[in-house]
Length: 414
Image 1 (tube, one colour):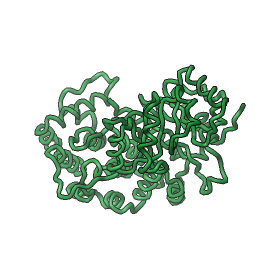
Image 2 (cartoon, helix red, strand yellow; image 1 turned 90 degrees about the vertical axis):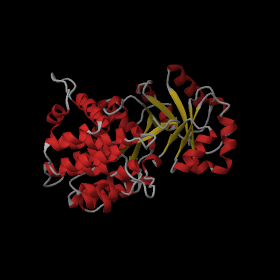
Image 3 (cartoon, rainbow, N blue to C red; image 1 turned 30 degrees about the horizontal axis):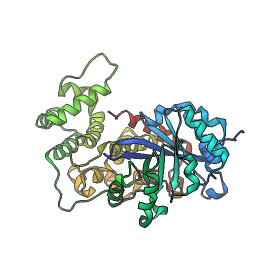
Image 4 (tube, rainbow, N blue to C red; image 1 turned 60 degrees about the horizontal axis):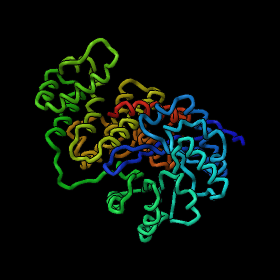
């Protein structure tokens, strides 16, 4: 069997985090969606998956897109039966069987064969238990339960059946913390959804000492303060100093000199990079969030994507690139600190274009941020509409920037 692939520029490439019970990164689902407004008349998921594998992952490598984690990839019956699937690295992917696949003898045999080769398999978008799934019991490693179609009222009975299988249960489309808690109580092993990136504002919350220090440092760097003033804040915060030295040494890997002091770290990074490391440090130094790592990856990828795309916009300067990166990183600070964004950025006194982009999604950077957010939540129609207003940016440039940003964000994993 042979599947015809389509040009990669016909698709948006997406990646959604999968978390474990301790809210650490456990993997990613790789999502490929048509860029056409009327996707029903365009291409199915088979062509999308094959095209991205052919044009992107064979060239870039799964390490670029996934880091150290596995990628969950949707396959239809047609692709499941195709030899192309065996080109995927068995230690890097989980093959997701779409819910549209009819469980025939041929499908059961194929799943058993792929399992014997060392591949991991998952049932995707399961709404309820059905006895016709039983023949797959020994070849399936994950069962993904769609919370929206399963219905909370019958979720327990569905889980009771699948808990008899030797599988991990994954709750998908988890939209808020209440759903996450319910799924934890029910015994799910893994969780997928955009809920972890949504702000949970706590009224009257105050920033911790280290959080205040980070905001002070960012303000000093943005205002181009003397190095001595910046060093003074670092010296008052040993934890921040340690993280700065560790991250700077990581950035300097391969160079002859090792960073051993705050002044040498600041010299090594320069003001532009220091500002970026401080923004990223916020996501690794915070003690109130239970799971900074997924948020760090999302913030890093968002900031880098915006920087790379801004660079290709008419009249872009280094300042605009820096502002784009800052907007991307700072756009998730309300989630990290559980505070309104205006309270976080006001002490920084940022330029008007940054403030307008963050608080109102106004201006070129605001439009760029909104487009990236739509891509992250897979609202492709809204992303397409904004992309039209961001010419000469196009889907090719967006995908390339996204892939480069994912690779860059993977470098922050410990």
